[in-house]
Image (tube, rainbow, N blue to C red; front, side, top):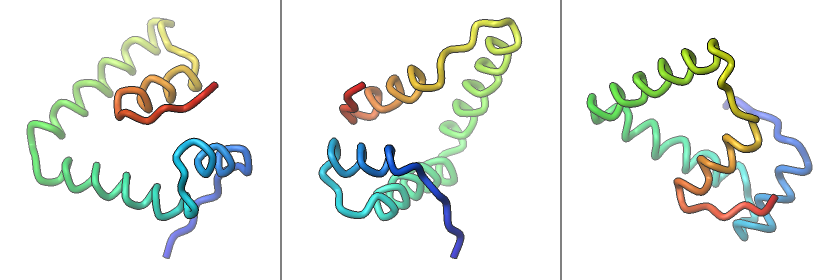
Length: 84
């Protein structure tokens, strides 16, 4: 089994804001759901590819966004409320 390390700060934030006791189980569920969706839907995969390509072009043009802001935007899009 592969292991990933997350910071103590992120662990605490996950436990506090999402009310979960096992951040690893939460991460596995979220990643599995997204991978399942991507593997089963070619249109979804194509849309992800398009977004990645667009983001790379924006980054190369100097229009990147702060990583924290990006993560907050993704969380909001997925209905996860993270306090800053």
